[in-house]
Image 1 (cartoon, one colour):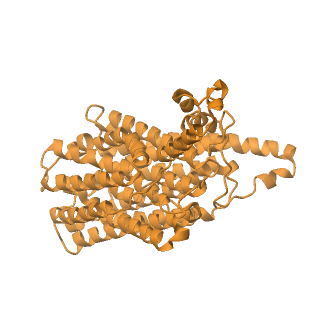
Image 2 (image 1 turned 90 degrees about the vertical axis):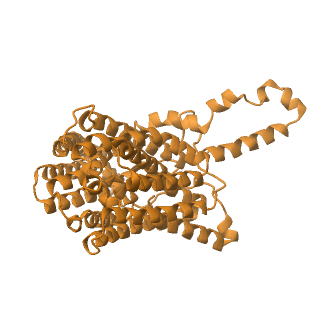
Amino acid sequence: MVAEDTALSGDRSDVENEMNMKLPTCEDGDMAVSACEALSPSDGPQEEARDPKKWKWAVMFLCFYGFMASIKPGEPFITPYLLSPEKNFTREEVTNEITPVLTYSYMAVLVPAFLLTDLMRYKPVLIIQGVSQVVIWVILLLGTSLLEMQFMEFFYGITMACRVAYSSYIFSLVSPTLYQRVAGYSRSAVLLGVFISSVVGQLCMSVGNVSYYTLNAISLGFVSFGLLLSLCLPWPKRSLFFNRLRNQEQKELAAAASKSELDKINPKDAVPSSASRWKDSVILQMLLEVRNVLKRPNLRLWSLWWVFNSTGYYLVLFYVHILWNKVYPATENKHVYNGAVEAASTLLSTLTSFSAGYVKIRWNVWSELVIGLITALQAGLLLLMGTTDNIWVCYLAYVLFRGFYQFLVPIATFQIASSLTKELCALVFGINTFLGTILKTIINLIFADKRGLALDVHSQFLVYFVYFTILTVVYFVCAAVVITRHYRNQPAEGGGTDEQAASTELHPVAADAETLSNGKSAKA
């Protein structure tokens, strides 16, 4: 449920990563934008060459904003707060009526947020995110009805969708040569904020013995300060799609105006109509090229992993705090350890993401097997969480579950992003994220929503176990096919096979411009 945002400050940010893969990473859509920027640089501002202090201060301020916006000590304790006598909602209401709204809201807002982020050049979307955060905590403090809590989840969906603005904003401040470095800075700021937030929240509960209401009031103060910081952010002059294309159109019109009258009356050299310009536009060509991208086995595999495994991962994050409350309904606030567990899982996720950069295997051969093994481990952990009565076992299983997922996220990001242009990369990741959101919505509607089966939280975790088990079987079957085919063809290929399938370490590579179906370059 709202547990999701705790992870998403670190996880929901889920995606902002430096593609050296030896730095902490984030997840999903946010990470996708960062990876695309880092691996496929394009023309960027050159202010740092003339005024290095200006861009350094801008990056520092943005990182400070990311850090402060991630500090919400009450976030790991929202579910216990809703179930406590202070709010007095039933577990069925939280599970089947309040939590599902988050998924529906996120699906509805995701595409508009992505388009507005680029069209409005980041800052307005960050302000919208800040306003949504303030509204969330005001509702938590003052709201009492079921409808008000559903509105709270609706605004959570908005904050999730708007996180892409932060992950991509920082690349508008510097030139491509600095993308990797600043991506590490921005991501580290968020991770540090999430970690400190969870630790502070746990200390307030266990040592300070403060009430949930007081902790949420403290969180409201932090998010209000984050909103003020967003108002002070500089407004970038460029973005990935719309503003860049607008500048190109202005240049084309200027070139057309400079033609001689003789050229203008020549039908062959006439200025193309708006319809023909749209037909030949880069965005449309990239949409058509997505179909060709899916024909590549490696990109298809990791894109499908992104859609299906991230779906299961986020469903677990949505409902795990409700599960903890059912396994161990603590009578005293100081015995609720959600903050400590979230801090531990954030730290382990950072370490596993970091370690992914040192893995050297033949990904073209072993990808399916590695994914299958990790998915099988996650399925086992879900079965353990869904059946155990020991809260500490449940805590440990959750920490490991998140760590395994975070290990594969940077690998998937690199495998997808390294061979695509920045624009096509952002489009592919955006489609993957949106498809995953649709799948989450369908599963939520069937199994969690009161209009569907309205399963209790333990039954839902058994459904997630079955879901990951099915994925495991599919991955193992695909692995058997790929490995068998590889070793069957190896003798015929001779000595070149070992050289072509050499162990690969995840480092950034210089990606060539992706050729579109019509022979044009996506970097045109």
